[in-house]
Length: 276
Ligand code: GLU
Image 1 (cartoon, rainbow, N blue to C red):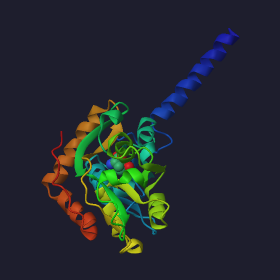
Image 2: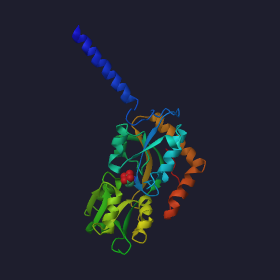
Image 3: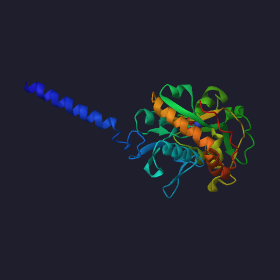
Image 4: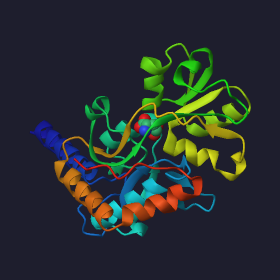
């Protein structure tokens, strides 16, 4: 009898703790119910000017930030209700699967490998893989030139994968956790090129501290369709986000955000992709 009581107590405690977890206790979300009462945690990049950047004053700016803010608003959350979570390339699937974020808007290309773990809304932007080299370097003009070079890319990015699998399998590829480390390496000649999406590279090249130091090769090495990553199977959220993205395009907010965020770098973007 005693034993029975004890196990009942254990079960009750377990149910309680499971309920607490289901309410999203640690991320502080209200589960995205859209009633406007709670907070929503959204994954973005913190180190990509033009896309997702944490500024020295602690505020956030970029195209992904604007897209995320628009979508959150459509889901019932004001900008002040958003908690931004840094989402490095290699951690995005885990952050989503673990429920640390409601969704991820972080230069996140849609592909089949990732779709095994997460679902995507969108696409909301089309970029292309490119190379960033030092301004005075004329030895790298095409992908094959990389085969004898030191190339930097970020762990868990499609760019690193593309280099290894097809673009330049013999390149001395160094994978770092973030793009800032690659930039330092490019500047001090530890690496000869940095590869990722042109949208990201344009932002770095135009930064004040990099003025005149780097140039983009201008190669469209791949198509990178950016999607909003969300928990696998959450079709309700996926549909709501797709509706928000369609509205963002049709009411002119998409173009406004593009001009505001990519204008300063002179990046020539592709037209808004059709949302599937
Ligand atoms: N868009 C590419 C990707 O999702 C490269 C940029 C990034 O690492 O965020 O892997």
